[in-house]
Length: 124
Image 1 (cartoon, rainbow, N blue to C red):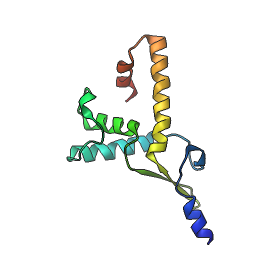
Image 2 (image 1 turned 60 degrees about the vertical axis):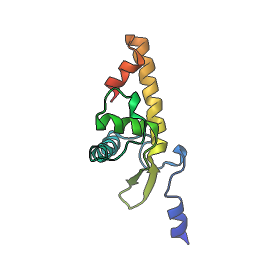
Image 3 (image 1 turned 180 degrees about the horizontal axis):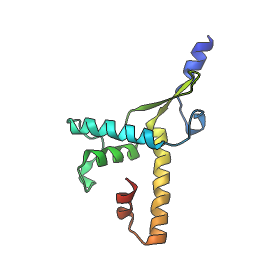
Image 4 (image 1 turned 90 degrees about the horizontal axis):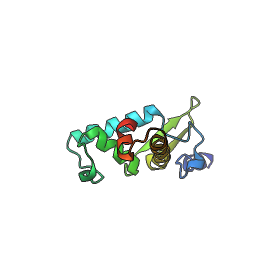
């Protein structure tokens, strides 16, 4: 019975339930997600977002915008050395990434006078 309760709490449903690792995407997780999805796109998988609004049709750029949109049906498995783990939906962590990008856009516009569209070239 104890194992069943532990397995139920393994899947994270909100940001506050994350106990293993930071409450954001690490640079390694982000790179792994974007590279795996870009490989799928390059192999012919259909994009999950409307790419007509994007300037570049590069699979890496499309994968990054899919990550930001929160449409990727992926889970991140974070494991402790003792074997405990959590499964975190990418959609939860993409919300935190969007907040980070909004802060960067705001600061870049305020400090450097750069348009918001131009900021995304440096964020990716």
